[in-house]
Image 1 (spheres, rainbow, N blue to C red):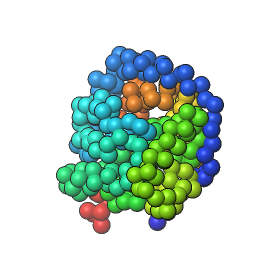
Image 2: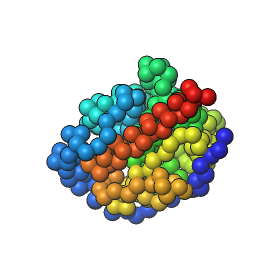
Image 3: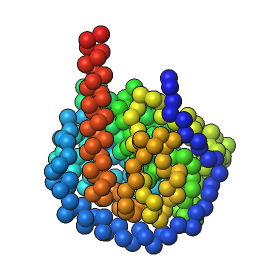
Image 4: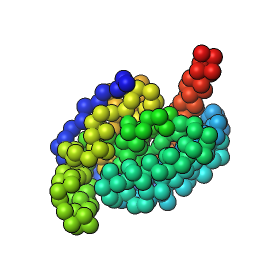
Length: 267
């Protein structure tokens, strides 16, 4: 199966980003309510296909409810990830996400699903798509560092705390001693190094004013799949430019899927 190759850095790289920019997240939230896209104007409608939303590091599904309601209004069938708090072994989180993906796939008549992941949620989404491509039509990442861990030192410190908690819960460091690093040998980390199968449509949305992660690790090697917006890292979950891109890219993915189904029926 053809793969879209992206370089993956193994080292943890601290980057002194202007984290204060994240204080402007409220501007993204307010701007969304004044944007036509929030009301479904000027963008294509959905086809009732399943769209699964995956939260970022340390977060739960709660803050993605806004996007979920919007997707429902747009004509899609949204699902929250049900992974709990995104602060656990990535492999364990992916296994939980797989349960939701399988449920959505089954409930929509075995139609491939779409995944939208914010920050670390995008990393989990790409891992699921790589491991289970027969159930995934497309993956959209929002400021997701899927090419390596290159973040503000505060974020890296938080990841070390999570890693230590995981080791305490396991009462062992033997299984995956490099957990929460790019060198981890778990199936999820290895799948990230393999990248997305060519049949899965990918979209990477990023902002160069990101105060949390280095935007350079949030883009693919395919420039046609990368889309820059103005905004904050956290605020991409509420950004009107992002919502417009979501509508457009989901529509393109569904059109591609329908064309493939038509071709198979006529074969």
